[in-house]
Length: 214
Image 1 (cartoon, rainbow, N blue to C red):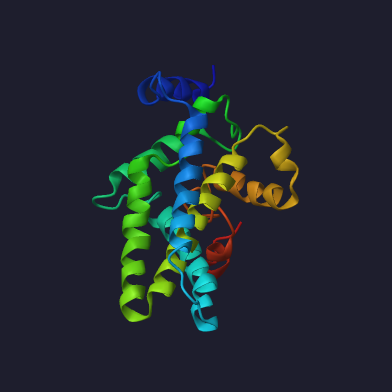
Image 2 (image 1 turned 30 degrees about the horizontal axis):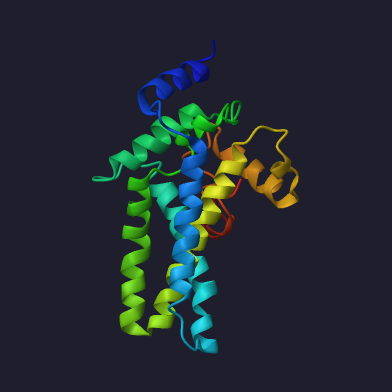
């Protein structure tokens, strides 16, 4: 038995309870995001052309936040955020290596999708403070548009990351864009590159800006 398979067995016994269902975890992520998008969208009123600029700017902010969180929190020990580092560098990268990237069952989603506590951390650190600041500085529309982009980007992140860890014969992996992005993520899972290259899970804008695309 390989070291990866041994780690997977230990991880499943320690961290995946008997009631865990990967399908329900994924459904929660999708429903949480879509309901949030609908509720936020319902708050918009007479959005101006200038306010619509929030969307591309918020997208860029989300991409750089994804990059920064992955590079400097998930792969560096930051005081107070050790749980994030342990779960990602200490567990995710041992569960999935560049030679063993695929889920073996729905239950392995536990090693890919964010648990609820990290979802709260993501929105608490990167989305909520900025949304409140935008409301104070500009308008409610700008704040709600930012929230919508944050939720949409989070859902995009989770779905893409899950796709990268599907078996090679999955129909989703026939999509050209997913195939290209998956190759970048597989390179990131190399032990010699994981702390240095390809930190964007979605679109490699941050990696391009900071010179870490491989």
